[in-house]
Every structure is written in structure tokens, then in C-alpha cells.
Length: 341
Image (cartoon, rainbow, N blue to C red; front, side, top):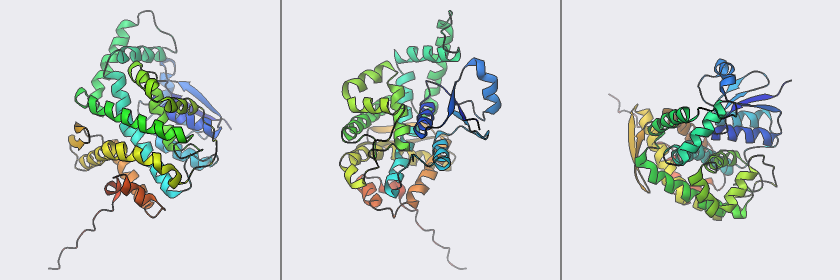
């Protein structure tokens, strides 16, 4: 049976996330770099114009990186990409969504919201589209790419008004994660999880952009080593116990995840439910306003249900409470019955 085919791009964190997972699983796959040359084949398979696009050996197509990792873990259980421990699995899912829906905003803003990062990234995208070669007449098409991506910043909430919050957020998270990785090979011990694949993919992208790369290189050496390891990770041991992880894992949640991502995700999901076009939410660093993201809203509803389903897992409730995150996963109040007529 033929292996997997992964249509991806070197400028796509979600492509890196899936490619790393396939390598970790030891699965046979073909990396198909998106370019003009394979445009027709890609669009014949794709439901949306985005990568990654994974074609299974049976011919099934999926473009959602979170779904892809879950499907791969079910189809190929060993080595696992999620802990058996219910509390760790729930925390891994929270961090995966943090990476996909919040940290990605910071990555996108750092790349396309400032110079010289925007110019450098537009040339990388152009080279990719042209099959790895820079065309002779590259300045005009590169400028067009930069302008198109700059126009997309408001769609993901990465406009100029939110830039200070996003920059402070990713830097705070990076420093706490660097402290954690001083003590642990991966986020949950000696074995990578979905959280590792998702978070590393965003930071791997930042390390290709001049401004965040300089900052991370100067301040987060353990994070850099982890990112390099996550390109083709190998387990170095088992998952650790939550008690052993908590001293450096809890500050990651307390100082960042519960301060920015969870309030934002909760507000966005509520706005999507009410079919509002825009919303604002007060975060630890100030007011954050953007267009409602319906897909992220649905993702958070699913995440909340999964975390609530694991509420009896040992240590999870106390960890979320200590992190200031418990209210975001609390059960909704029971609906009162209307009095009889």
C-alpha cells in the first residue's frame, strides 16, 4: 500500500506540525511542497485553499491539523502522541488549541505586520510558489504578496492595535516555556504530545523571521533546542506525572494561557454563537478587539467539552483552579424549568 502524501509549505506552521507528527510515527509519506506546478492536483483534492492537506493511503483527504493528529494517533497507536493520563491529555489539548488559535496570531503579526520580516517572508513565499527558485522579476510579485498578507492581518486579529498584546504574549509564553524545558525534554516529560507538535510549529516559523528569531535566540536557548528536536522528534522516556511537571508547567498556564488565550477564546466563541461580526475582550495586557473567528469558536466548544469530560481525572481540577483557568471549563448552569401554568 502506498504511503501518505502531505501537501504543505515551508511557511506554514500547520504543515510543520503534521510533518513532524508523521516523522515521529515513522510513517511512509511524500512531502509535496505547494507550488504553481501542482496547483491543479491540489485544488482537485482540497476543500479549502490552505495547507496542510494530507492524503491517506486509502485516499482520504484532511486539512485540519488537529483532526489529522488525532486520526494518526488512532490509526497508528504507537508511539502515542497523547498521554494516557487524563489530566495531561486535557492540558495537552488546551496547549494545542493555544498554539493553533492564539500563538499563531503572534506568529502572523510578527511576520507580516512589521519590517524587515514582511519583505523577507514575501520572497520566501514567492520562491516556494515558483518551485524553489526566485524569478528574475521578483520585486513586483513579492510586493503583491506582502500587500495581500498585510490585508489579512485584521481577519485573524493581528492588526496594529493588537500588536503590543500579541508581542508581549508570545514573549511571556516563550520565557515560561524555556524555563520548563530546562527541566524536561518535552512539555509532558520524556515523550512528545500534540501540544509539542503544535507549539513547536509556531515557534519554528518565528525562528525563520528576523525580529522574533533574534529575540528568541537571545533569551530562550532551551526552546530553540526543543524546536530543533521537534523537527524529527524521538521519545526519550515516558510521560511524567503531573505533580513532577507542575512547578514549571503551572506558571505557563497561570501567567499566559489563562491570561490571554482562554479569555479570548471564550469571548470569541460567545460572539460566534451570537453571530456577531466583531467582539472585544479585556485581557491582562488591555483590550483586544477583532473580527469573530467562527472556526476558532467551534474548536473551543469542542475543546471545552473534552476538558469537561476529563474533569474527574486526578489532579486536573486543582491544576486548572491554581492556574486561574477553572471557570472557563466549568459546567454550564442547569436550565431552570418554567413553572407549570
